[in-house]
Image (cartoon, rainbow, N blue to C red; front, side, top):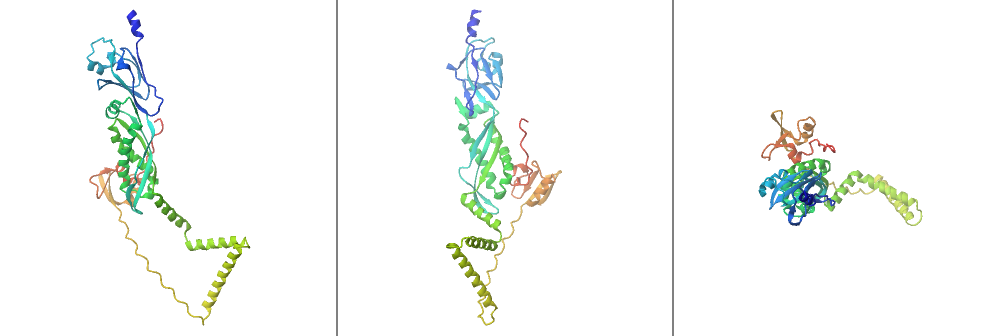
Length: 375
């Protein structure tokens, strides 16, 4: 009885409370890795505890409270060949793995992505956004990523994950399947496509990519300035009428200031008007010398030939339908013939693929909203 009382004073309490927000794995520090038989293990929600014996992963505990005995340490008992009723201290490493979501992880392109746009030709694009992950397979994550690191944070793996993301997005944008001016309207579809495409890559590390967002896709500054000028010209419309309007406004402002520069501007305006009237009078005088006929403008350049549309085939109802022009695909989506799981094919593809795996069809697919919170 006295021995039981003394042994009770040495029962360990093993647990982990994290206040950092970025720790993905933490090793329980214990001198000599010695744990008393009957120790209390507390695994909180959003955690998993992994026992490692002599470099080998043994038992894994989900959230809950446990008394460490041979009956709930079956793998560790087998590895150490414990006899029935074993009650001595034992050695093992305990790793706590955070299984909650880690949101707001950043990704972005270091160098511009080169692509060939249908309207503007060769272009360079930059992109950035956020993503979130969670550990779904603690032993795989410990084996493939953490190793023997006593405290593993998101900063230590973000570089590897960012490289995988950039490879996928460079492939998606580099095909030029979505016109540059339509990228903003297809960011949600592009985000969903990248999330599904990257899930198998993340699963190799015991991770689940729960969400990936493309927040911005931008052009180089000089291209943006040229695009702004083009937009400004489209807003102005008739350049001659705009110039006359600007001149009329300038004369009105000069008339409001009859002294100094305002009077000089009015005199210049009157002189211009008299000159125009004199020119009109000379034009009506039959004895005036004939004016030189202006040279005709050069003939307009030949319009470039239209870009042929790609032809697509859709598989629904047990048969293949097509060929269908690319401009007709939105109508097929609204009619319910083109869905995310519809098999599609065009010239240049080696096999039929679901529409959700073909980036150039993102503009035609109906966006699927994300799941409701708490669903």
